[in-house]
Length: 151
Image (tube, rainbow, N blue to C red; front, side, top):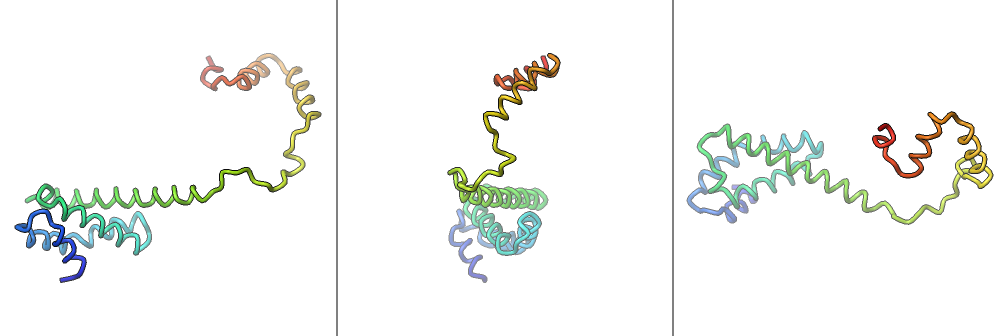
C-alpha cells in the first residue's frame, strides 16, 4: 500500500468503505492524473490535483460512492478539471499580485507625451471636423458609452 493511499484511508469518512475506496483509487488514479495533466501541462501540478481530488473523495466517500462506475468516472473527471482550473487561476492571480501598483519611473517617449500645444492643436482640429464626426468624440469625452452614443 502506498503512503498516499494510507493517508486517504486514514481520512476516509466511513471505515466500512476501505476496500471500495482502494478499488476506486487504483482504478481511477490514472484518469484523474491524465485529466489534470492535459490542463496543467506539468506533472508535479497534475500530481497535486490528483492528491487533492482523492483527499476530497476520501473525506466524502460515503456520499460520493456510486454503484454506476460511469457516473463516478464522470464525477472524478469533473473534479479534476475544476481543481486544475482553480490552480491555474490562482497561479495567474499570484503572478498579477507581483506587478507593482506604483507608476513606473521610466521616462515616457517624447512622441507619447502630450504637451499643452498639442492639446490646443487637437482641440482646434476636432472643432474643424464635420458634426457627424465631432459629436461622437465629444460625447465619448463626456463619459458616454458607445451604446449611448449610437442611440
